Length: 275
Image (cartoon, rainbow, N blue to C red):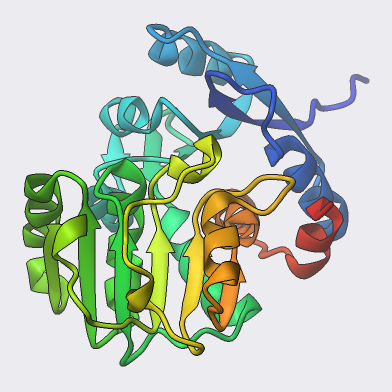
């Protein structure tokens, strides 16, 4: 009598060799006693759909989706969760019993949980500045606004993109868009860097008057060394200077919950990944 094969999951991207997702989900599976495998899949830039279908035929049950395929996954999905619709991007694919795929987005939930649960950062009633107006920011705006901050400002080098993104979410809360050079002298309780500038050792061109000793600065990027934005926040005496490693683990935990119906504990996993 043959042994039933384990349920298969994976993260798909290009490049993918750097991904921590297999390590994270393997720990989740061990911790929750779930019998599954999790691997990294490198898809050709023009071959996302074919790779996903092949994975499904080979017994794949679900996928995490990373750069540059979140829009491809959005278009590939047979149905979308409300979170994915708001984000206009998919980072989690769930294969349903009929073979169709449900697309979801756990990025914003992961960010909000990391801030509120892991770092005791209160979002309700606060003034939040988000730097950048690309897909990463669009993916998290919904859950941030759901936390009922007093106001959210989206600032971007290209003003039009910031204004358009803010208008897209205008029914969800007090949000406005502006250019990086239009921030003036206001201060914020939370500044989130949603640009990839940190990975190139750069910080968006913003004045240091935007923060005070109580401001939390959060970089959605992470690396083994403090990112450029985290270093900038420390140098300017921010109350907290945090990177996005916790967000990575928390969005993964939300995906794992969607697939398996059990929510893993994240704090020890985050600790194990921190150099």
